[in-house]
Every structure is written in C-alpha cells, then in structure tokens.
Image (cartoon, rainbow, N blue to C red):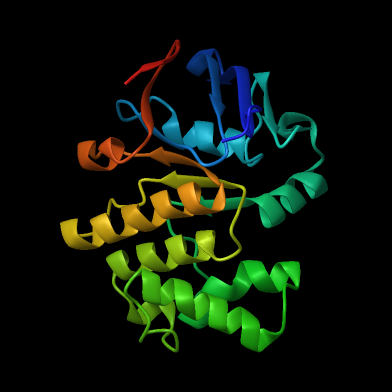
Length: 224
C-alpha cells in the first residue's frame, strides 16, 4: 500500500431536512485495502456510498479520490470520474434490460473505448466466468434470477479494474457458496490490482473478509 490514502473523507454530513442521516464521518482508505462498513438499517450506509461516488451531495465535508475533490466536481466531471475510476455494485443491480448479459458487463469498457469489441467481450467473459456465469453471456437480464443479476452487477463493476470499488450488500442475494466466491473475487481485485474496496454489508462473514471494519452511526464512524 502507498503512503497516501486513495480515498480521504473528512467531516462528511448528510441531512434530510433537519434530520441528520450521518454526521462528521472521517476515514481514509488505502489502495489495496478492503474496508467493511456495517451499521443498523436506516443509518445511511447507502447514502454514504452515493456521496462518495458523487451521486449525492453531502451537506458538508469533503471527499477526495486520487487527489480530486469529488464534492467539488461538476456533474459532467463527476460522471467521468465514475466512468473511469469507480466500480459500483448497487443493491438494485441497474442492469440494462435491452442488452445481453455479456454486453452489460462489457459496458464500462465500451464507455471508455478500451480495446476492440472482441477484446472487451473477452474481458467481460473472464469476469462472468469468475462469478460462475460464464455460460450465460448471451441471455437477457429478464432470464436471470436475482442472485445471478447480483453477480452480473459485480462482474460489471470489476471489468475495468476500477481504482475504487463501492459495493452495497454485494452478497445479499447469494447463497453461502456463491457469496464466498464473490467475496474472494472482490478481495483479490483489491489486493492484487491495488484497488480500494468499501464493502457495505450486514453479513458478519463478509465483514470478516475485510482488512478492517467500521460501524456507521448517526454521529460518525467507530471501530467495528
């Protein structure tokens, strides 16, 4: 790991009206590190991830990724940051129903124009195989189960080797064997490719795979 954190969060606060969702969140995340974020339902874990990704604006505080102030970026630059440096596993999957499974996974590469179409599909196929869906690339999302869609979303988040991986309950729809396979892949992506990984989870087993655990409370973060 490098001496400078890849992600720096200082004083992050988000309110809905007068009600604080969370306040004064401070933490660093290093390249190659896996951090698990746990906490009660409704405490704002998903909202925090959205603020880190520039999808939501905090009421105060700063987020810096690779030296860039995420909280100060324009909408256009924020979208470019997500395209080029972030991988996001959403709870709702957000796969595109009109595309095949293979093309859904390859989409980040196409947006970056990274290689030929054959090269993009080859890389996407590698990730589908890694999550146990190598034979399903030609299918449409409607033909897959919820657990399979979760794995498609994970493969898509990893395909372009992002600098920062944000995973919101990535094993929530998976059986224990598949969950372990996916966790191993997420941890390997971080440790082997120098990505930083923030894993939001209710699973004690998933949290135990992280390098450290923090708990989100309405007044900030505490050791998990």
